[in-house]
Length: 170
Image (tube, rainbow, N blue to C red):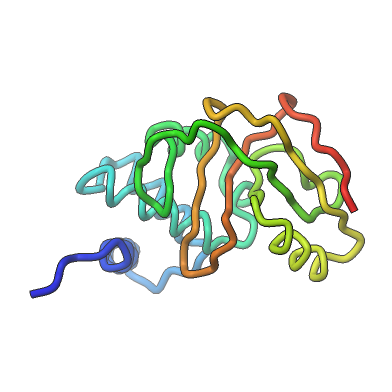
Protein backbone atom coordinates (compact mmCIF):
# COMPACT_ATOMS: atom_id res chain seq x y z
CA UNK A 1 0.00 0.00 0.00
CA UNK A 2 1.48 3.34 -1.05
CA UNK A 3 1.48 6.52 0.97
CA UNK A 4 -1.09 9.21 0.26
CA UNK A 5 0.52 12.12 -1.58
CA UNK A 6 -0.37 15.80 -1.55
CA UNK A 7 -1.62 15.36 -5.11
CA UNK A 8 -3.97 12.58 -3.94
CA UNK A 9 -5.37 14.88 -1.26
CA UNK A 10 -5.84 17.77 -3.73
CA UNK A 11 -7.59 15.53 -6.27
CA UNK A 12 -9.84 14.05 -3.58
CA UNK A 13 -10.77 17.56 -2.43
CA UNK A 14 -11.65 18.64 -6.00
CA UNK A 15 -13.83 15.54 -6.40
CA UNK A 16 -15.55 16.25 -3.06
CA UNK A 17 -16.16 19.87 -4.11
CA UNK A 18 -17.71 18.68 -7.37
CA UNK A 19 -19.87 16.16 -5.55
CA UNK A 20 -21.06 18.87 -3.18
CA UNK A 21 -21.83 21.19 -6.10
CA UNK A 22 -23.50 18.39 -8.06
CA UNK A 23 -21.58 19.25 -11.21
CA UNK A 24 -18.15 19.51 -12.82
CA UNK A 25 -16.21 22.50 -11.48
CA UNK A 26 -13.94 24.51 -13.73
CA UNK A 27 -10.95 26.37 -12.32
CA UNK A 28 -12.98 29.55 -11.83
CA UNK A 29 -15.69 27.65 -9.92
CA UNK A 30 -13.08 25.98 -7.77
CA UNK A 31 -12.16 29.15 -5.91
CA UNK A 32 -15.79 29.76 -4.96
CA UNK A 33 -16.15 26.14 -3.80
CA UNK A 34 -12.97 26.58 -1.76
CA UNK A 35 -14.32 29.64 -0.01
CA UNK A 36 -17.75 28.08 0.60
CA UNK A 37 -16.22 24.93 2.06
CA UNK A 38 -13.87 26.97 4.25
CA UNK A 39 -16.78 29.06 5.55
CA UNK A 40 -18.72 25.85 6.26
CA UNK A 41 -15.69 24.34 8.03
CA UNK A 42 -15.85 21.40 5.61
CA UNK A 43 -12.12 20.64 5.42
CA UNK A 44 -10.85 17.64 7.33
CA UNK A 45 -7.70 19.49 8.44
CA UNK A 46 -5.42 22.41 7.57
CA UNK A 47 -3.30 20.22 5.29
CA UNK A 48 -6.30 19.53 3.07
CA UNK A 49 -7.29 23.20 3.19
CA UNK A 50 -3.74 24.34 2.32
CA UNK A 51 -3.57 22.02 -0.69
CA UNK A 52 -7.05 23.08 -1.83
CA UNK A 53 -6.10 26.76 -1.49
CA UNK A 54 -2.92 26.16 -3.46
CA UNK A 55 -4.83 24.35 -6.21
CA UNK A 56 -7.62 26.94 -6.41
CA UNK A 57 -5.20 29.90 -6.61
CA UNK A 58 -2.84 28.36 -9.15
CA UNK A 59 -5.51 27.02 -11.50
CA UNK A 60 -7.54 30.25 -11.67
CA UNK A 61 -6.72 32.69 -14.46
CA UNK A 62 -7.35 35.85 -12.39
CA UNK A 63 -8.01 34.70 -8.83
CA UNK A 64 -7.91 38.10 -7.13
CA UNK A 65 -10.26 39.57 -9.74
CA UNK A 66 -12.86 36.81 -9.46
CA UNK A 67 -13.03 36.27 -5.69
CA UNK A 68 -12.76 39.30 -3.43
CA UNK A 69 -9.21 39.95 -2.19
CA UNK A 70 -10.52 40.14 1.38
CA UNK A 71 -11.58 36.47 1.17
CA UNK A 72 -8.24 35.36 -0.30
CA UNK A 73 -6.32 37.23 2.42
CA UNK A 74 -8.57 35.78 5.10
CA UNK A 75 -7.86 32.23 3.88
CA UNK A 76 -4.12 32.76 3.31
CA UNK A 77 -3.73 34.43 6.71
CA UNK A 78 -5.46 31.50 8.39
CA UNK A 79 -2.77 29.15 7.07
CA UNK A 80 0.32 31.34 7.20
CA UNK A 81 3.28 30.71 4.90
CA UNK A 82 2.87 27.87 2.39
CA UNK A 83 5.46 26.02 0.35
CA UNK A 84 4.12 23.58 -2.23
CA UNK A 85 0.70 23.74 -0.60
CA UNK A 86 2.09 22.79 2.82
CA UNK A 87 2.30 25.04 5.87
CA UNK A 88 5.96 25.94 6.40
CA UNK A 89 8.28 28.11 8.41
CA UNK A 90 8.86 31.57 6.96
CA UNK A 91 12.22 31.87 5.21
CA UNK A 92 14.84 34.17 6.69
CA UNK A 93 14.76 36.33 3.57
CA UNK A 94 12.70 36.80 0.42
CA UNK A 95 14.53 36.97 -2.92
CA UNK A 96 13.97 39.73 -5.47
CA UNK A 97 10.60 39.02 -7.06
CA UNK A 98 9.55 39.72 -10.65
CA UNK A 99 6.24 40.14 -12.46
CA UNK A 100 5.43 40.74 -16.10
CA UNK A 101 2.48 43.12 -16.19
CA UNK A 102 1.05 46.35 -17.45
CA UNK A 103 1.12 49.15 -14.87
CA UNK A 104 -2.20 48.57 -13.12
CA UNK A 105 -1.56 44.84 -12.65
CA UNK A 106 1.28 45.20 -10.15
CA UNK A 107 -0.90 46.42 -7.27
CA UNK A 108 -2.93 44.34 -4.87
CA UNK A 109 -2.87 40.61 -4.33
CA UNK A 110 -0.78 39.32 -7.22
CA UNK A 111 1.56 36.49 -8.20
CA UNK A 112 5.27 37.16 -8.55
CA UNK A 113 8.20 34.87 -9.35
CA UNK A 114 11.73 34.67 -8.02
CA UNK A 115 12.89 33.46 -11.46
CA UNK A 116 13.53 36.27 -13.97
CA UNK A 117 13.22 33.78 -16.87
CA UNK A 118 9.67 32.90 -15.79
CA UNK A 119 8.83 36.62 -15.75
CA UNK A 120 10.31 36.99 -19.25
CA UNK A 121 8.17 34.09 -20.52
CA UNK A 122 5.05 35.83 -19.20
CA UNK A 123 6.17 39.14 -20.69
CA UNK A 124 6.33 37.47 -24.11
CA UNK A 125 2.65 36.47 -23.74
CA UNK A 126 1.29 39.73 -22.28
CA UNK A 127 1.01 42.58 -24.81
CA UNK A 128 2.52 45.93 -23.73
CA UNK A 129 3.89 44.47 -20.51
CA UNK A 130 7.09 45.22 -18.69
CA UNK A 131 8.97 43.31 -16.02
CA UNK A 132 8.55 44.77 -12.56
CA UNK A 133 10.66 43.91 -9.51
CA UNK A 134 10.06 43.89 -5.77
CA UNK A 135 13.07 43.89 -3.51
CA UNK A 136 13.45 44.04 0.25
CA UNK A 137 10.16 42.24 0.96
CA UNK A 138 10.16 41.41 4.65
CA UNK A 139 9.55 37.71 5.44
CA UNK A 140 6.80 38.66 7.91
CA UNK A 141 4.86 40.41 5.17
CA UNK A 142 2.00 38.51 3.58
CA UNK A 143 3.81 36.05 1.31
CA UNK A 144 2.97 32.59 0.10
CA UNK A 145 5.30 30.56 -2.08
CA UNK A 146 3.94 27.89 -4.38
CA UNK A 147 5.23 25.46 -7.01
CA UNK A 148 1.92 23.78 -7.79
CA UNK A 149 0.81 21.62 -10.66
CA UNK A 150 4.35 20.90 -11.83
CA UNK A 151 4.63 24.39 -13.32
CA UNK A 152 7.89 25.23 -11.54
CA UNK A 153 7.12 28.95 -11.67
CA UNK A 154 8.52 29.70 -8.21
CA UNK A 155 5.35 31.65 -7.54
CA UNK A 156 5.00 34.01 -4.60
CA UNK A 157 1.64 35.60 -3.79
CA UNK A 158 2.20 39.11 -2.48
CA UNK A 159 -0.29 41.71 -1.34
CA UNK A 160 1.53 44.80 -2.56
CA UNK A 161 -1.23 47.16 -1.46
CA UNK A 162 0.42 50.47 -0.82
CA UNK A 163 3.33 49.00 1.12
CA UNK A 164 5.69 48.39 -1.78
CA UNK A 165 6.84 50.41 -4.72
CA UNK A 166 7.59 48.00 -7.58
CA UNK A 167 10.51 49.05 -9.75
CA UNK A 168 10.19 48.96 -13.53
CA UNK A 169 12.74 46.63 -15.11
CA UNK A 170 13.27 45.85 -18.76
